[in-house]
Amino acid sequence: TYLTSIGAPTMVVEKRVDLSGQILNETSSVCGSVSWPRKGKHLVFDGRFLHAAPTDLLEEGAFDEQCKFDTPIDISEKERKVLMRRHRRVTLLVNIWLNYKPFNVNAFPDTMLDKLSKVDMLGDANLFDDSKSSKTCGKVVVVKDGKGTLACSDHVTQKDAAIALTKMSWPMGRDNETIEALMPLELIRNCDEGSDVIIEWENGLSLSASHA
Image 1 (cartoon, one colour):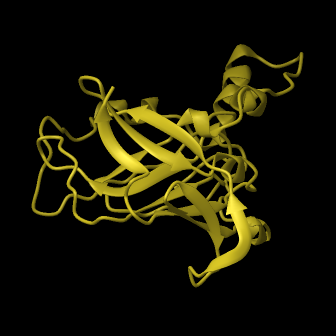
Image 2 (cartoon, one colour):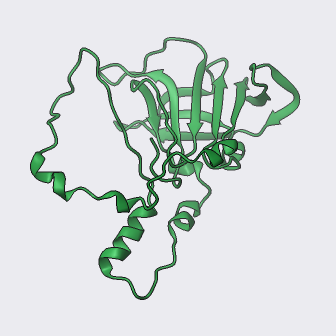
Image 3 (cartoon, helix red, strand yellow):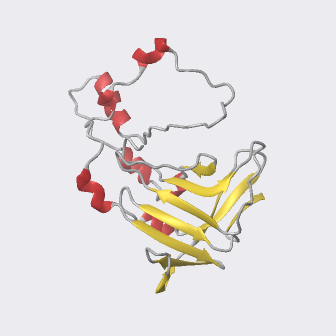
């Protein structure tokens, strides 16, 4: 659940990773989604899928601009820090493990409960603002043979709806392994707050794991 409306979108790729960290090649085609933050918006997915919040999906300097705010002269340092916390990318993440308990995970200590930030960190506690629901849209981009096409809601490609693609890569967190994908970057960056973009890599050639 997004608690603020700023920062990079969440990207989820329907590629699962086994316990050894190897990517499972379950299907030839790959589907993914890019979800832009909006306060109160929920995002649910299989936690085994590859997921991250890549900052390079934002335009350069966009996050710095989002974090800027006017500081009143007559406020205390504590109040200023509260304002800073309201201008962060904040999410509430809930993981559910079935028939499995992760290693080295302990219950949050009761002695730390009073150290948690209060609700004033977020300002307006009304997370679910229906007036913003009209901004949410779901675009579907089909990537096949290195070309991108905007699809209809029923995933039938539209004529003359070519979408520019950008080759992007991200580190996998071990050795020099990276994951690469052709992304409709311009389309993603032009989306409204809270929007979603679904990407289907039809032949699986545009999304791969390789060693740099």
